[in-house]
Length: 191
Image (cartoon, rainbow, N blue to C red; front, side):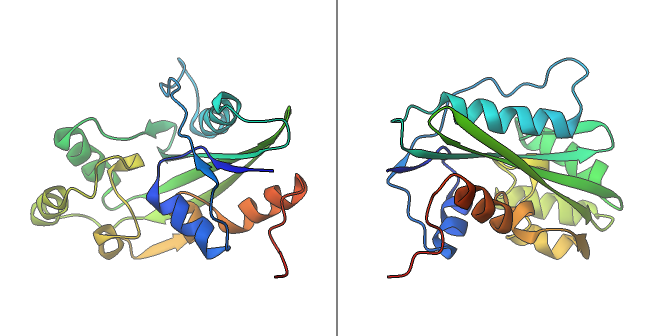
């Protein structure tokens, strides 16, 4: 049995390492991540995680783990910004408001796919131009849903969360351990 992480995210790899799990292979799938017309954030996120898990090549007994993180401002999906201008627009929209961070995880073993989500509420403080420009200059916004990563400099911009800190980072550890156990992957190994 091989453990395949279907993600190139260094944060997901670090969070798995916290569980003592080191992937045998890292194979990020290449799928279309554009939302469908009228698609809401939670169904979108669950769909992407499952599509990613199904797209990763694996053997019949291998365990594949994929995830998708989406920032939702009401019904609006804030994905990974294309450029600094879009990241600035996202940060401006999020400033002073609560939003949801949804991370869906999908675990596949053979033809069986289990999917679960973690939904957290995050409040970002109202941001000054200096804070937005400083954060954009850091480059931390790149490749991150909603244009920020809570585990870095943006942590100083977030006074309040309700939910899973690791889910906001991109891999809810409790839900991940439960799904891996459900497909027979030994999370609680005794060495």
